[in-house]
Image (cartoon, rainbow, N blue to C red; front, side, top):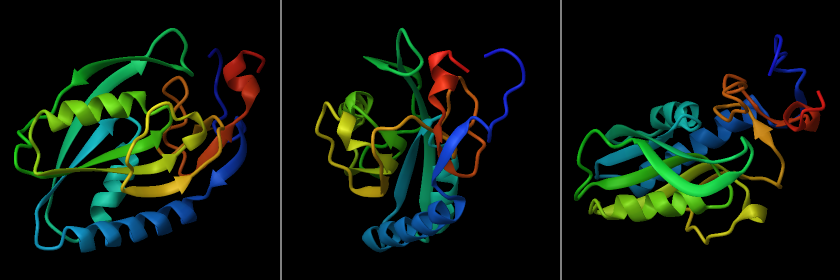
Length: 188
């Protein structure tokens, strides 16, 4: 990307408004709180995209929570397609053995990266492991992933905002929007 970027002008349409996100996060927080009542919960955020979602979600949960962060890389040749190869750039800071763990994702697309992470985390012997995602894009799914908590199911569109990026930009938008194709196809 060259020159200044106009974040909002690069968005073709708002797919999920800030208000809709906040309402859904409150609902998910209540469901998670009810499901984990009387238990301690460890939220694991997959950096960087899920950070805004996890920050809001943990404040909507009213049972004791511990948080941890992981960073993985699964993108290969292009910035818009996953290579299917996963590298752990930052591992968990503490043990999750015998802990109830909720893996917090920004978006589930092909499921390849998440499938790897689920297997990896199960190898650390948590008491339970569940998945919570802000966005689910089932049209692109290559691996069946059991999602326990879903914010929104969306069509196969290139989305940014609320943590989701293109070229490390757009994460700070307070909504989820569809990025104009000319921005990521080189025509803009």
